[in-house]
Image 1 (tube, rainbow, N blue to C red):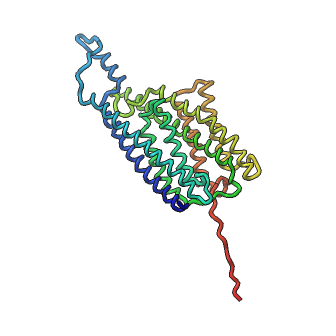
Image 2: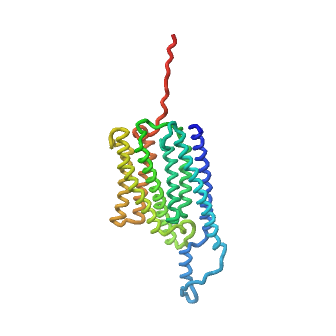
Image 3: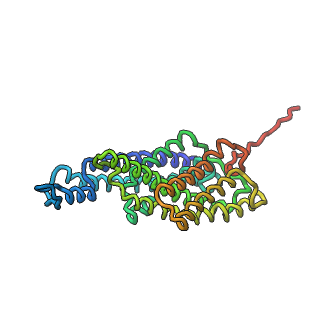
Length: 343
């Protein structure tokens, strides 16, 4: 296949995986819609334990016969399996899009030469991380968030960030670029998943306070999320996993790559500064958790501040600083100018 054909294949794969993610998102929406009226297990146990009998004494109720609501978890499981299967298919096609994007360049290069390619790769690692952690942490509750997030980001990537395939600058043809960006993408995916858990923690915490204050029964998607302590723990573990990788990417391989490319380890480039700010925020988050025992809403807010600095470093620097940053990897192919002298 020619380089142009690889580029077309990559674009087609992006469109195909977008369709698969959309179908997976619909399946997961159907999954949680099916359980909207079903009472969560812990709520059902609480209701049975406090059921009034006779003169007002509360005793445990005997199990009742199955109702239409009791059958809904079965539908939830089926739709959940369909959604995960579609996500796996989408991730495989997504990987094809990333690989063929690199093969489309002449000469062949790594597929993260600009914002479009980095976003394409980063969203793939978000899905990959979610799938790898799915069974370990029982992340079925995170499925609609991940698929919806990746679908929206891919749409923005194609509509607003797409660029033609161009070669990298000669000075950046370095193995340190590969090591640095791979580590940064993995850490970004881990921080993004952890940020999703932090957002869900804050939303559920606020929702529980309001429903308890109003005396309303709990139900729906938020009621089926894990306990707040579980959300907090999953967020902490994903951030703890991503932080040393980000340290390796931003403070070790990044300066080495900068020295190879520009002859200096640190130059106060906007992306370098914001990468360090991101590192400081996440270091503060982990330090506060380990030493001061910060948990819950305070820790979730710090984690989201870190996520905001991370994504500003990726998106904001390119838009607000433009050519002020040297971290624009891709360069257009040089155009030869031929002058003809007639007579």
